[in-house]
Image 1 (cartoon, rainbow, N blue to C red):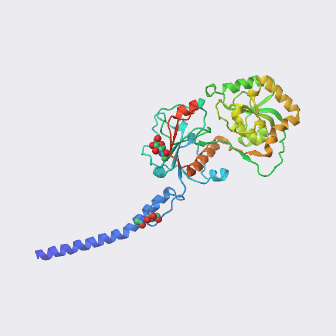
Image 2 (cartoon, rainbow, N blue to C red):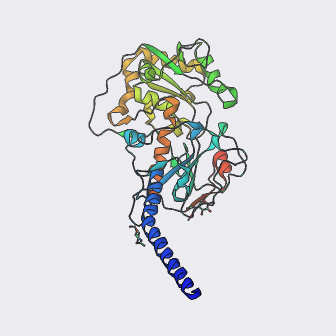
Length: 373
Ligand SMILES: *[C@@H]1O[C@H](CO)[C@@H](O)[C@H](O)[C@H]1NC(C)=O
Ligand SMILES: *[C@@H]1O[C@H](CO)[C@@H](O)[C@H](O)[C@H]1NC(C)=O
């Protein structure tokens, strides 16, 4: 009996295991299917679901935005819509960190103690991108950033990825039609904080307006007119001259303040990077530079002269036969779109090894501290 009992127990055990194993076999595919689905919901469009549950990397490289610039987000589709860039997978989903080929960090958003940077080890293929839109005057030196990044994304041309408003070459010869002019000199300025370097341009403006009428929009001076984003280009177009005054003066620091008038059919009056430096970006006869004049009064006299002489004035548009300026996106909401799209295009092409060693030494002193292999 005892033996019999034990045999019955053995049979029961075997049956139990058969049932258990069968259940396992039935449940396994469901479980795997579930896992497969889970991975794909992380980023439904980017990953291909394969039957054996391997999560395949997309063919395009992944660019992860770890720190959004000042929390300003944009629609990833904008890269394709506005700049025809579609060469990477843009995401801000941090769970993709291990798979990301590039990771973008916006300088101002990096914590002083760096504790908002990734804690996980960096995959060998991954490149960290230091993204900064400001000039050295307005860039804080945060300790610990040397030797951390592989690429820089700034306005500077001497390194990696440059966020620039390029002139494009006109293929067909289009006739330039000068927009209707209602004012002589205009200026849009919102920042007047001396700590940002803005006092140079403000002093120049105060001197200039003693000799020529300047219509001001924005909040930088009292009594200025409020300007809506949708009126930006048409307002600049309605002026003969536009003060393209940068907040601080640095090599290559040429911003949308110059692009706006170039797009609109207005002559820019530059205060910022030197004439020689500007000429590396735009035709020499397309703009007026404050350095061409001994003082604001002499500049005002020249502007008056051009205002009277249409032939002289129109010479500033001769370049339009060959080039065209591409409008930049307006609003702070869109300010960061183009640079990040540019980084996306870059990461898809770049497969060099690089390390940015002396980040601030390079950025502030204009000397490259970079190693190439
Ligand atoms: C799983 O799928 C991937 C991608 O299709 C394939 O390369 C790999 O060989 C498969 N693995 C197995 C174990 O079947
Ligand atoms: C990126 O920079 C880090 C830090 O210097 C370095 O360890 C890593 O090898 C670099 N990676 C690439 C792909 O250049």
